[in-house]
Image 1 (cartoon, one colour):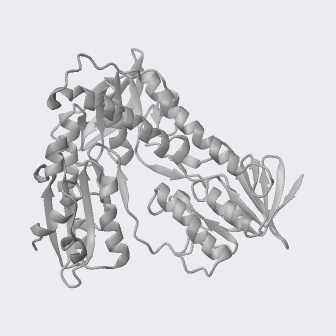
Image 2: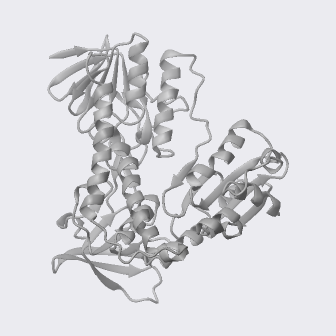
Image 3: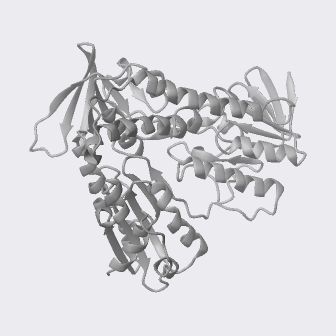
Length: 462
């Protein structure tokens, strides 16, 4: 069977459904090819279920702290299967909503199956989706990424957890060894610890969240360590093997003065990075360029090296967040339907949903110095904020970088309760290109955590 359509979107990531709907409303014929579940990583195993599970973990943690607030809770029991079940139900509702959006009538048309290029002709591109051939004039690649597996001896011989399969395990692990101290690793480390598991984190670097400034990273590290998360940093896991119903990890220290060691755990969770799903798309058939890591090379308008082929979301490298993928859909809508003025030259905030959360936008201090910027730095401990004291959420700090010449914000790190919300005040100021005075001179409600985003400005120094 040959299917004719103007636009084929390969992969139903966060850019796909809104873009497909907009194109269809504009009168374009659109098909979406998806080989697994609708919604991409966010809906199926990322944002949606992880934040649901993290919410359960926070409830358990707060219940254990009840005595700090004058409340007596004799025992906190975690039903791990019920926690996972709740996250699954929320995920399933999201899936169903997407299925309704892409359901009948047949524009947008959903085609189930793996898609790959098989050639070109005078009508455009020819692609094979499952057993059907699709002929289209434009292709948008939105196939996302998967866990990048580290070169560890024995890894292929054990069963391990990762971002894609953790939600399918309803039995609570006794001891999780997490490989990787990045964003995923830190969120899952705290989740499993608050569920009552022992947790040990391994990373080859000497700090967690290696892209962040050391003072911010260290503040979060101390909080997680105080909760009982064990860390083995500057350490390379060299071998894993099945052992006594669990897994034995062998590791070397980066410091040659320290001896190698072993650790026995019930489970291993791989969180050492992501790799793009580009290796079986037939990109070489039509000459789509990828970089050394397999990411599709695009320009600021998300155009690939082949006219008529675009890429959105994590597959094109750069910031790998759901909100950037969603905005990629807006950029592509502008290219295909509007004036084409939208580009990836944008301010991209992000968050790490640990507790306290880390909300980030703009440059780190390390990046600003490397770029030769002249700036002032402000730091404010959340323990000095009235609302934080009143609610018992005193962990964390706020750090801002302000350009000395323009008095505009270069970057901010908010490590606090609800930081993913608080950071948007800084995001708005940066998007507006406004001086930091608009925050400094504003009247903020008291008592609020948001006051801390203003208080930090009184601490600015060179």
